[in-house]
Image 1 (cartoon, one colour):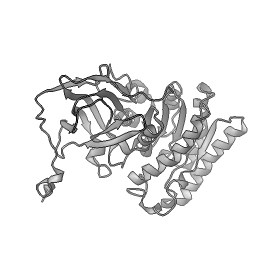
Image 2 (cartoon, rainbow, N blue to C red):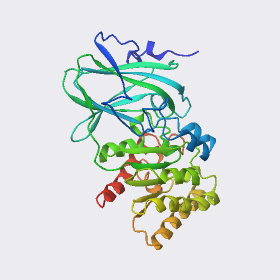
Image 3 (cartoon, helix red, strand yellow):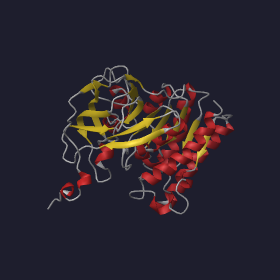
Image 4 (cartoon, one colour):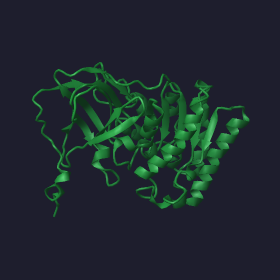
Length: 358
């Protein structure tokens, strides 16, 4: 028997019909919206993270997963007393590892000069098929800047933002005037197991540093292939973060690919800070994790010995140490919200240091 919990707890009711008579929907592909973290979004039939042909050259898995728009964001400013969304999907990711709020939902932040403050998740109904609508109302009408984060594991065809018909609509609050940070890696980078999109570690870092970023996490499919390295090497970046330890099939594969991957990025970006990260969950498979960490440390030391003073190493084992060491993952591998927050705190400190040198 399937329980309809919303019939028991009224707080679980999701409003699915918008009763705002003065609403007007705007296509976020059009100005003045600012869209970040997505590839050629004005000309693609759905939101994606990289060119289809490039992804196909990497692997069938990357070709499928680049369609998932994790890390995508839209920013805008308005004086509307509500913000609504209408979303159309091509595919909705559903898995035991995912909340629907994360895999298919969006979340809303208000951007101020000081920080970005969480407002609420824009939750899809549990039985949602291929589209949904949600609305957030405010007590007063005034000019506010917002960020809406895209879902982690779904393919989004269209996103429309609903505002009052007479509302001001302007570009969003700008990020720092720097090229984006590029993150490459496994399902951890992808954001699997965060309860909502704003809690993947890159989004947390982005809010803290007021920095744009692009998420090239490919769940189970980040294997350090030369084809993806060559594509990433051509992208504008202020910092490159390499975190694909988990997806290397074995230690030998990691050893074979890790330093060559660095060399491809470095050849086109001789002065860009390059950050190497080892896996965070050492306790669940300590022998393999330590061998893998040694591979990454060897890459770091080799790069430093070759004269690269702009390469950094972060030991993932340090992320979860302390009182809550055993509470940081969903399944011993994928960080939960606590794990992602601790990762963002540790990685963010290193990136803050690096940004002082740029």
